Image (cartoon, rainbow, N blue to C red; front, side):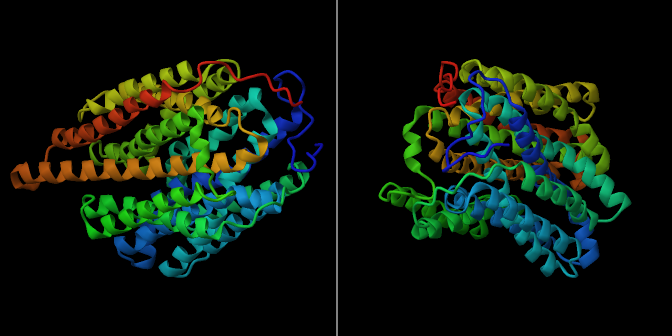
Length: 487
């Protein structure tokens, strides 16, 4: 691979929109590097009960195994653009893999719940950099007319992780024990690190500006406090609890302060001036709303199969797996279409498919056909892929190469916040519905019809957020990506 020089984009691309072997190798490498990170989140969720039994810890303590990781990950995302400019893409990519690998080994060897939480933070520091760095590297190398297909390729781990993770995690916990949830990352990370030394391009760092310390002091704790407040909403039974309201209000205040600060400095961590671009602003809004609907639904689906249909975690994961079929098809088709056609109609079709797929779960009953539910999952998975792939590529349209790392960080932040907000809102809605139906049931034992009604009510909320995504999608570019003239 011929590396780019002086921080410029790679020069080995052809004049047309074909994917070169070098780009395909780079995409495969980034897929491998991010695979362990994406699977790890959902595999850990499957092992929560095993952690409790192993360490004798309460639910309020064990939840920090997930929350600590999420907070560390959120705090690292804003740093992506600066570290890429300052230290170089290849060096930071390798450091991110090494951090995630070290955290995985330490988590697998944890001797107490406190040590496990601490080592999950180390994992989150690596994972928080790995995902946006990989995306920024590939998008900068790709050029305008290849981003859709390459976004689809590196989107496979991100979109399939919530589907495959529960299945893989259930098998590992049942057969090998919870420690292998973390040890399984080791060969993947070692292979990714070794291949990165050979394949990853190594452009000269742009150097440039000092770290925006005030911006970092505002946005990183602001994101962490916001994500933490949202994560506590389900356990607290709503957004009125001080444990939810205080961190959420503090986090939002810090983010607003960061926005005001970023408008006054020359090189902020996240350039809020990007939102002057209609394509970028519309794309960010679609990513946020689809994140609410999709990740919120992914929280509800396994719970429905376990609590209403009586399935164990492994079978619940298998019943959710058809969503991956729809995702896989959509990633291929939407990736090709996004490079040659306007993103607006593709995203609108994706939103429609997501709404139709979610509709089956909004009207679900205790005896709804499993085949019907599987078909609905294929449909919603196809909608999710069709919506996200072209919108992620559209967010970067027309941006200078040097703006891409900070732009990908900003989009990643909206995706993270959307997922956290969706999980919080739907968890609160479901919890309140369950409480009401338990209180109304004779003897406090609601029927399976009442339980399925509670889940259906929560899925109506997911459907509503998905439908709302059609509004910003109308403001996406109505023309195909321009031909890349820089190669």
